[in-house]
Length: 385
Image (cartoon, rainbow, N blue to C red; front, side, top):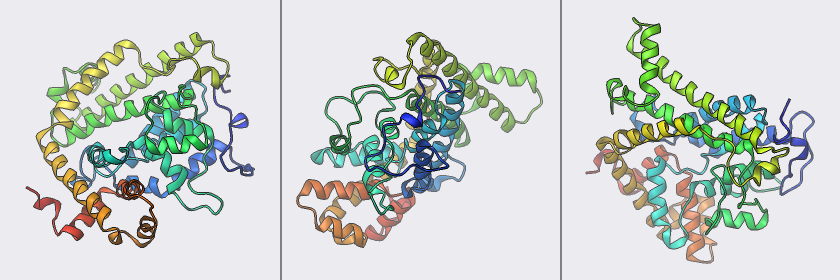
């Protein structure tokens, strides 16, 4: 049985374009299913988190990450008696707006787009699900419910100040109440993102040889997890030892969010989703001790993984890919695929043109961006010096 403060599909705020309800699926189930079937969701298979797509088959991609986030989010939502379908929809959609090459690609595109309003991956996700996906006869985008769109837009908290262009443009048509917190379900999706990437970046960093198990043994939570595994399974092989230890770290994070959030929800006195939105503070959180531990882990990962020399070398190369492609397409739009070239040709001003080129590049996978760069400039990534 759901809690009173959980989102209810029967009282959802509806879609921008009204549709007849499904006989078999709730509105949030349909949102989730439309996200899974979206072209942008499939492209996440070849968009990376930290490593470039060709570097190894075992490293996480945006797709595997999104699936892991959704799994964590379902678990937490169930324990807190929230709506699992809405939680899962937001979790699966949260990375749709990312560029090729992870945050490196986003940083490069944001810098290039500075004269035209910048680039923001959360706002781009909204643009994808409200405009750029074009499969349905009656509307552009996926025509998701207000509740899901709100969660995508502000799962990390209220969005105030100068809004990214794509978000401001849609919000003018369909007010997402950006000044408030999102539903508890969207907040769960946000914390699940933190849990998933902290856990899998330790896995991927070890697999890549960027650090060793000895070096992470002093990290909070991690050392205790390894000690417990060694006590229970003293003769296990190194691969199983690593997996058993890191899944315990994973469990500590999930359990902490559930316990802490259950207490916060009870203390809030909330009896509706709108009560959650207007509390003025998040209700889905880590405890202070675990949050301090996570800051230590993230500090380690920043230094040893995200800024590792081998990773930084690749960052420089893929930044050059984006920096080359953007001005080329801006000046020679005939190089774009026909349907993109036609839309760009109809652009009335340089800002509109730049935003279309940005949309095109942001939608590229790592693989396609590298292939296009090699085709147009005659240089493979391995040729960069």
